[in-house]
Length: 28
Image (cartoon, rainbow, N blue to C red):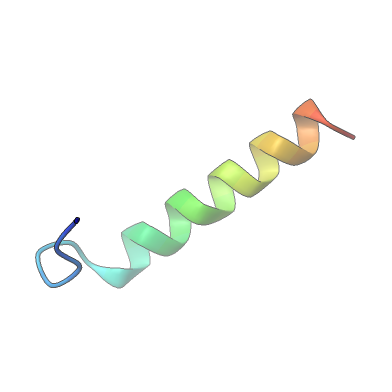
């Protein structure tokens, strides 16, 4: 399991948004 305490929450949020947009673009 990834340690959330080691990585900032903002980074996680950014990654989530990026993946969401990528999926949206892939499956419009």
